[in-house]
Length: 303
Image 1 (cartoon, rainbow, N blue to C red):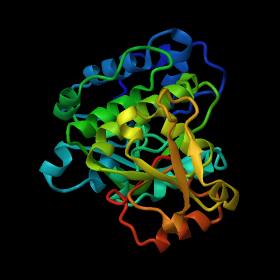
Image 2: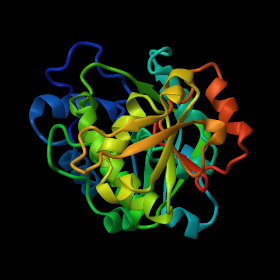
Image 3: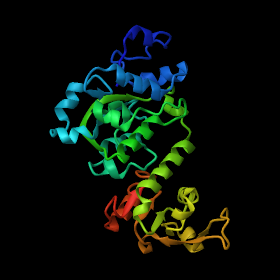
Image 4: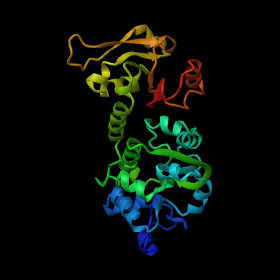
């Protein structure tokens, strides 16, 4: 989606060595952060500058074509991305493992996590017709998570996600990325809304897996109708389980709602899981596997 009419113009004023010869999209995050032009506007305008029938985020279009789905009907409605290598290699290690190791099913079931889109935006490739159908990027300006909002709208309209299992992008981490201007609370609000829109209407009741800070925060962030569907919290912490319940002190209801806290093995599915992945040495993942549940049907990750 990047079209640069004057490469010299975009390098003017940047620190020596800041840009590689490949001029990948990440540099635009820096440019936009200092120019005052919204990321959404820049990205949407870049698509309009391209005269092809497809929109691609980087110059390895031939490599993506070699590995993308063969059926035209599958390609039409999908965002296609790829695996990445990080630079520096030790930056955002958990996120990099997540983005590279998701299964094809998890590309759709793990869209509610704090990691954001399940294929990273610098690798996106899609048909121009589909881009036009989904709509332009949100052009609200600095602090707007335009990538996430576009991805959610793509999913709302029935779009799919496909990942090429080859590392075709060197994904650089730098301090000037516009993503750092997006507040965590902004992301949280959009995630909760998407969860309530896409998942919770299909469940009569559910359990929040994590009676700690993140689980309680999710409960408080839900609408009153969604909170009434929460039958329990679950956890492995004996102190929390021994307490027996969580009381929603900020509630205007009388009596104030008290939600039971159970051991995860005694809790009722489906679950909204607020436990971060890849942080417990596999203990949480083993506990989840022991329940023999199906992701997307019996639980979703919201960590």
